[in-house]
Length: 265
Ligand SMILES: [Zn+2]
Image 1 (cartoon, helix red, strand yellow):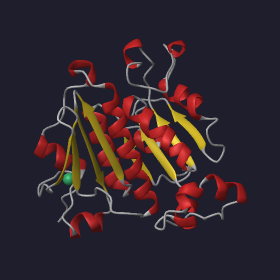
Image 2 (spheres, protein in one colour):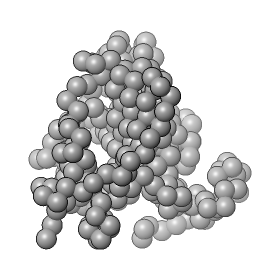
Image 3 (cartoon, protein in one colour):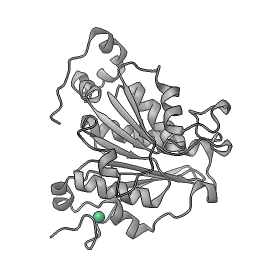
Image 4 (cartoon, helix red, strand yellow):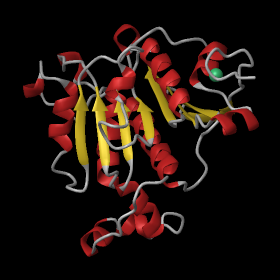
């Protein structure tokens, strides 16, 4: 990371004391978080769990990408929204909900729908601080694949999460070409080839309310690890959570040798 790291003020040292006490985090890790830019795509159930934890943790810049409006059926699990918010844009309402949590955190919204044609312009490095990580909180396969292509082409780490019915999953794709090839790691496109693209959405299949909180907070944990380098991320693996039977499983993800995105000679 080449961003200028600013030393913590006394107030910040106090505010983030419980982070700084973690030996692997220390002052340096917290300073990295404050200099970081996380882009969260989707302010639905997963995003509503990811966003407040990134804000409270002191991630310096957070961009929230969502073009949907809040509907009554969202209130069962999208816990940043109130009944009075019905009909409002999710991205700007999510910002309104968390903006007074942490003045260290700059929040911005993108309310256009992402496509292959506009993603480069919307996420352009010259219009905002360089993006250090993208957190995929969508439930749309086309947007997931679009994000995967963008992350691979720009070497931006991708933290992916999904929740449906009573099943959740989290995975991290480092997207550094050297790492992907040397360690034979997959991208999201490899994963979707092996495991099938989840075409159903929560609207069609249903979802247990706090399941999105479990998966979203796991994504927030992985995001902080990606940004600071602490611990070992879920890179190259998928964590599966079966809420019905209260079990977690982690499995290695195979790389697709003929992947149209990440398989280079
Ligand atoms: Zn791939």
